[in-house]
Length: 318
Ligand code: XMP
Image 1 (tube, rainbow, N blue to C red):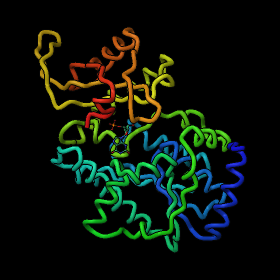
Image 2 (cartoon, helix red, strand yellow):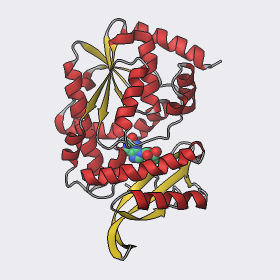
Image 3 (cartoon, rainbow, N blue to C red):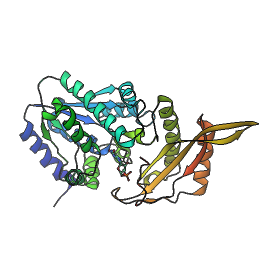
Image 4 (cartoon, rainbow, N blue to C red):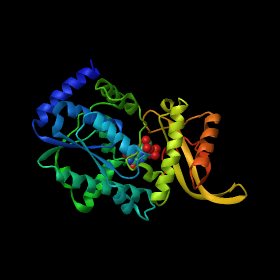
């Protein structure tokens, strides 16, 4: 019978047999899968695991600093790399959603490759791939693996991708990953985090991306997500976030006319992201959140709530 404890025991032994005394590099994202994979590997091989956590400048507000602290507190051998400017540069003037994904994916590969080169004698690349990712990469539906594939065709394989691969979560599902994480003593709040796309806020800022737009959306998103937590709604929602629309609309402040940005809030229920329903959030919550956003975030004068289900609408707007 499958239990998280027996999984941990068997997997730790399997990792030790597989990699021996070799060094392993792993990219942490702040998400559940890469975190659980890292803690498992850390248990198996300790300091031979080198984790790299890249700030692409498109994370949630304060996320890079707070998650990096959390990783260090968990005893992981982790290096935080703030590459925000490099990503922003790569994204300058890019408006097309797929081109943005490609720019972000390629910048990540470059940064990660640079960092991996600084480590000597690394033999293995560890990844937090879970079973549904294995199936998806076969059906090639896009996402990070597709980004890496398109990079191959252009510039050849980056060196870190020539490493041998170790994927301790390859055979299990998300709910099992969470149970394994709990057994390993990982903070329940981290394990209960909503999914967040690899390209981050980059695909929630419609159209071109600037540092100022990122700042604005980070503030909006922070108010929305903190509100969901304060109102006890966060765990009832599968995924939530805000989109910065490429639209200005007229507003009024005092006796001044304003002409500022509009943001859309989105919260969905889902089991796997393939289909999703919008969540019937309480009007009182939406009212408070909208007021907070408009009062506190400079440059935003209008908030709308997305009431579209998937299909036909996707969860992200890009
Ligand atoms: P959509 O928008 O296709 O999203 O309904 C389904 C789920 O996938 C996430 N998503 C991505 N994740 N890279 C990722 O790592 C991407 O390019 C990407 N696009 C969408 C989305 O957040 C949702 O959970």
